[in-house]
Image (cartoon, rainbow, N blue to C red; front, side, top):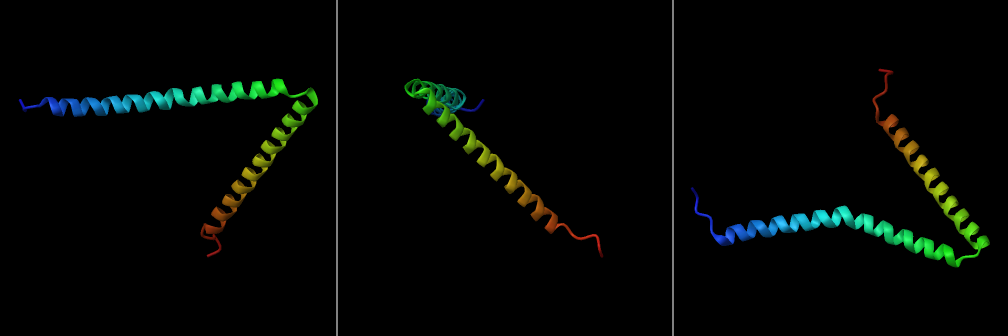
Length: 91
């Protein structure tokens, strides 16, 4: 059996702990951030009047629509580029 020193074992254990902590942060960090943003959004909505709230929601919808249109245009541009790269069947 190979000689394994305490230093080698401790080095491996440190790396295992680092990986576990990174996994924990990755798994629960996103969830915690979403919860914080949701709480902040609700607090902001509570301060706004109904008219201001409707305006904010309409702005958000318009922004999402703009992003959707931009994504569609980008996808169409990629499809056109792919069609242009294909060898033609004329030869």
